[in-house]
Length: 68
Image (cartoon, rainbow, N blue to C red; front, side):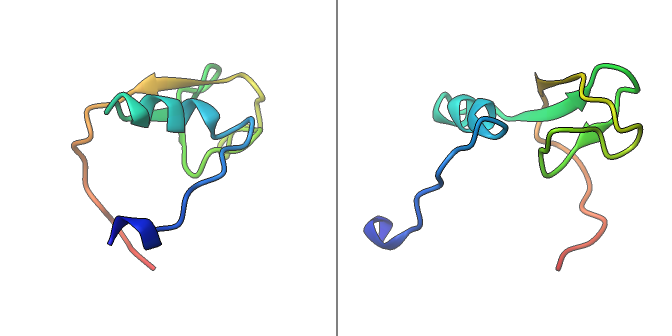
């Protein structure tokens, strides 16, 4: 039942993801300095600690390496 599903509360960091999802577009946060895709999104790059982040559309095809 869709009425019992939790509704996400977007933050300033996640809002671009949810806005794209409303349009059925998949985006991921990417570092403008080193090119790393951050997931989950945050205010700095996991690889180089840069704050130069933006959202880029991705294909949705990929490999899952682990799941917890």
